Structures are given as C-alpha cells and as structure tokens.
Image 1: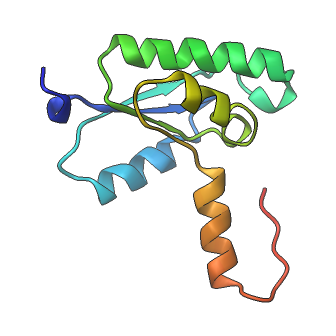
Image 2: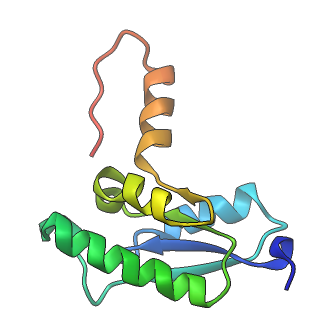
Length: 117
C-alpha cells in the first residue's frame, strides 16, 4: 500500500480522543483514520512515567502493525511526558495535543494568564 493510502493513527488512553479524531477528520476529510483507545489501562495520569512510556509504545506498536503513516497522540498525559522520546524513536511523524493547544491559547490571549488542563 502506498504511504498516501495508509491511515493516520489516533491514540488516546481512553475514549476522550474521539473528539481529536473528529477534528482530524474535519480538517483532513480525504484521509483515513484508525483510532485506538486504551481504556483497559486508563487513566494514564495516575501511572508512573515508565508505565506511561511502556503503554504508549505498546499502543503505537499496535497502530504501526496496522500500517499507519503517522500518529496523533490525543492523550494529554502522553503528549506532556513521553512525546519527545516517542518522536525520536519513530520513523513516522508523531503529533501531540499539548503544544498546539498551548500555542493557540497563547496567541488568542496575549498578555493574559491562561491555564491548560
């Protein structure tokens, strides 16, 4: 299968990432997506960094086995803790949700204090 025909994987520690999947499909209607929600191990926020990394690698490996061409990490915990390592270890693009959200919030609220949850 040519890379452009491969799906984009969307991963979350549960089902909350479906809102990210919905946004991705709206922004990229020509793309196919494959969603993996690891609800069996949710929530990730209560786990150690080592556990988060292990679960993340397992989830991304599952998506890679399905032939995804990129991964969107819809999990805030993974985006905030394990994303740089994951990006360095993968041969495909891996995107998180924290940095784009923070960037947009900063642009829209110049000179104001903001909080991200």
